[in-house]
Length: 309
Image (spheres, rainbow, N blue to C red):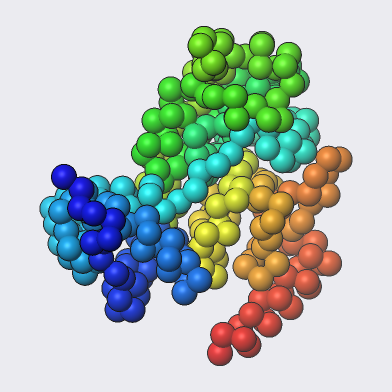
């Protein structure tokens, strides 16, 4: 039985630092002093469910219990926000469908390679990768020949929702009625995505800091990681961006959220102006990042280094 809310433990300074450090080490999530209340409030309920009496006891479970790895995954799910919807920041997705996939398809064809691999990293409940497939189908692209989509997230519960392909009305705030009618089947207020879309995506559970796990995906032509790295501290952001750079084929593209930038994280990419959007591009073999972007990024990295020293 759950204990009274008034009996919930108070998080001490030491406990906050220990739990914040563990979460940053596990998956890169950053909790500064301003987010201490969120950490305390969301984990207090879980501590009560487990019959524990302190955050220190919970830390011990995470660190030492045989099932601690499952519990830390549970903690991450409690602490992360997974709010999204179909066709969010649509301009980026259209740029990928209309320009990037044809460009990369031609590059791969010249080398005898197959369809363009796209990775939705941090896909949440699946709206983003499903949106890519729907827009590609609308553009006349053929899954399995022109492109294929992989999607990953650290939250098992949101991945379960993504795999089920069932959504409420809130996921359609940017979806035209004709697209909803074409690609979804409605029953009692729930919309189930059509099998022709659902079967085009391979979903997998993944921590972006787990290099061995991401290696299983192989090389990518496009990485879409939007509104994810904003939750990381500076060094973790740089680690993740370096990993994306290694995963991308020469000339491949990286899409970040509109509120995110590589300006003080990396100068290994160039900022590429496409017809609808700006995406980051890994220079092809023998190329270097465009001079203007390289100078700006290099100056920002140098400034960041001075501030941290």
